[in-house]
Amino acid sequence: MKLIYAIHKYDVTLFTWLNNVLIHASLVRLCRTISRTADGFLYVLVAAWLCWDQGVDDALLQAMILAFLIERPVYLLLKKSCKRNRPQQALENFCSVIKPADQFSFPSGHTSAAFMVATLLGYFLPELLPALYVWAALVGFSRVVLGVHFPTDTLMGMVLGVSVAIFSLNYIL
Image 1 (cartoon, rainbow, N blue to C red):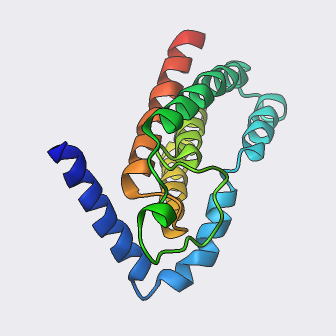
Image 2 (image 1 turned 90 degrees about the vertical axis):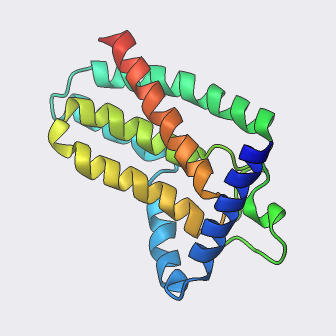
């Protein structure tokens, strides 16, 4: 329990600092846009376009389908079993910038999906991997700036997304 308390204390401290820095208001608009890029519908469009128009192997689409079939249920199971309150419910006098889609924050689904897709696309287009990981990290960062996740929610989202992507690639290839 001491470890969990220490992690939570660190999370709250980092979260509070980030949401109180002077540039926070300037970041919000950019973070809304970045967060929207990970809403989900773009993933399928990008994968389909890469497969059909750019000649990327159909294995990408197969790996993405398998990855989402695994990641979404695992993500939902973790959310419902951990039941970690979002910052707005956990912190007094805090109001998030956006309204989250559900009640619990751990892990970050946006971050998980972003890192999963970045890993999958990066496998087939290795020259894009650094840029894809920067984008995925910015998605996680944006979720904290928008006040809907603590930093460790996004860290666990990254671990989940990359793990599922690697599993899917190993299974498909």
